[in-house]
Length: 93
Image (tube, rainbow, N blue to C red):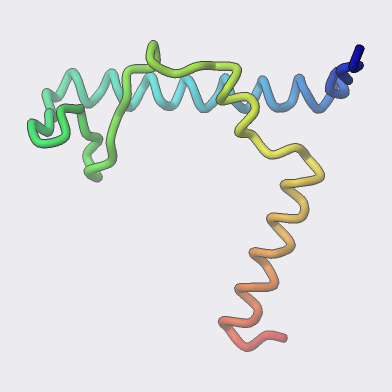
């Protein structure tokens, strides 16, 4: 039988906390768009003031959202790659 490794607790808690923050932002954007009645009939969804789609938070799988959050190590690599790209673009190499 294959063994499944549990994620490190601190990393897992970090990702769950960040996912909770994202869910709150999604909920607030959806609530405001619905209150303002900013409905896009072509896409059949609410939009925020910038025209971004606002989804009903009830339709989001929280565990899938947690899995989409980069780990600390992944985020460090992403940040380093973004810095390197900016340096190349601005000629600061």
